[in-house]
Image (cartoon, rainbow, N blue to C red; front, side, top):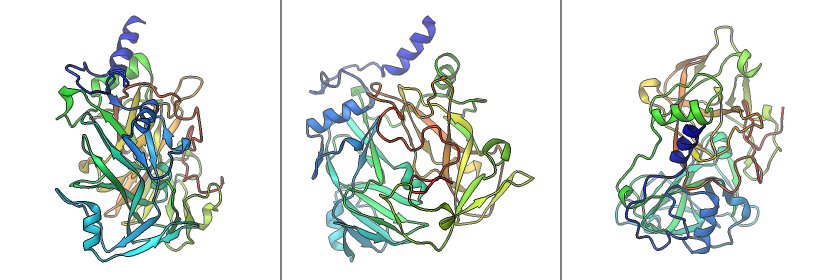
Length: 399
């Protein structure tokens, strides 16, 4: 028991802070790592997270903050990054675009088009704090390609230490045209606080050794075999024995518009083709088609750990998995203490590709929290995907 407690303490208390000169260190209790909901509230109070409209309580997640679309969207010809020493606003001014109002009932964002939307939130970060963004789970499962853009950025979805300025979302619906409005939440942002010795560090993931120790001695990460390769490797479930009589969904090509703020409203059969299990337990991915599949493993994210699905290793297959990557502390928790939620993955292949039941399909990386969240995933607010098996986005009525 003593060794288990020491391991949990080591994983919970971030690396030794060294020389910490941040004026906010007392308020942040000298904790370093992914910032929990209590830290996000403090950042709002201190003006590090600002908003044109008061932050809503529902935006706070255990390890991230939901971001909201602003009142206007700009339809542009192609995706872009501002690059060093340029602002998004300046580049938009130089481009030809259509301005669309998102006030009131909002507007339809057409499938296949690219939009840039100023967000209601902006940032004024300390030098010790950076951020990363991802689409929300519901956004990814609707195949809405959403990325964060900031001024002077040379990559998407990353906010550098000490950034001060506006936030923008690039929004490109890929399978369905969608209706969105001011205040709609399509992506979320996760903040990381570093101490002085970490300012140039880029990799904060727990090692495979640490994950194995955590799984063995403290908290089971999966319900079966632990497969590790620079993170937890997940296998696809394509058998009736694992996920039942529907092993996946494929997006239909010609459908009605989906309102991103309507929950439990749409019929599955109007938007998705159900995929039945095959005797050979295989699925051939058609190039360009969009699929919703599930992992064989059931997961549990420990209370002091956050996780993220990352791009698949190209050596494992020429397809893209999981557009929405954040897994909050407490995801998959059950009262029995066993892992209880499958990972649901959004899949698109570039070439015809045969998937087999049990094939490696995704990779989950884990990172320390700076502090355990006030409430874990599923314990407060609406947690649409706790205890999930194969499940579409919250917009669809239960089958």
